[in-house]
Image 1: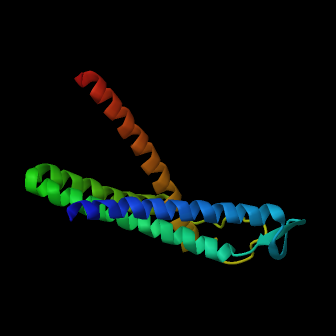
Image 2 (image 1 turned 135 degrees about the vertical axis):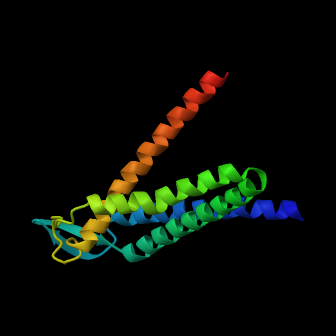
Length: 164
């Protein structure tokens, strides 16, 4: 019975991946065949508005949410197992999680300035003030996450090379 539960994530990942590939191919076909809802003038250029753009954005949000939920569940499982085996290491993992989720985003938000972003063809107010500051903080956090991931990969490679 336990073996059946281990197959659920594999089939879910396979199904979501397959569905995403089909949707992306469909979106590309619509863009390149000119199947659009109309045209939009941007800086003198007339660009087509692809059909179902909103649906594709919603699907992206759903996939990002599922990825975040899966990551959070895996992390909670790791911490629970670490508390059973090595509580000291579990506290270190929790400290790292708090650093990535609370401390680094707070620092990134304080560093961001919130100046208006010039977007060609956009005349709304969501690209200035607090929203621009949040977007810039997310961008800085992403830079930090990628850099720290690369550093961790390098450290892991060096550590395993030295250990042998």
